[in-house]
Image 1 (tube, rainbow, N blue to C red):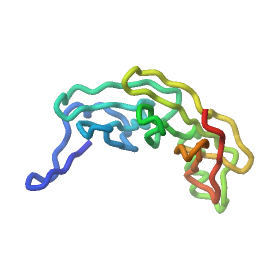
Image 2: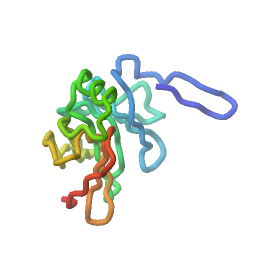
Image 3: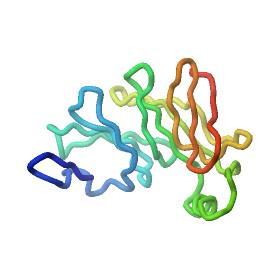
Image 4: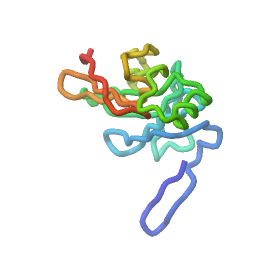
Length: 157
């Protein structure tokens, strides 16, 4: 993980040497830190700039790819595919418009309490497959895929 500051440029953040596959990143609501999806490590991570190299890890049951704040401002929607690397590469390398055979997973994570609740998991939902992202829109959660021409919409819980 790197950070950039005016007048200082890029710097490596301490505490992330053993973090596997850092990917989706969002800042904390107060701007004093950030959350990152560690894809290969199957864990979203929280870090505060003034506490580095200390980081807090939360285990999830899938490789997290994307993070998005929930409507409540306290929880984060964590999305990731259940596809293997070979399955994901096969999807990317194909001529298919969608890859509905590949599943996905979305959890609601409270970084303060460590509570994780499943929102959508593993299933294949018609032509929507390989989903890795969810965002709250009104009374719905919109689901996005890494390969497809559509979004999914489910009622918010």
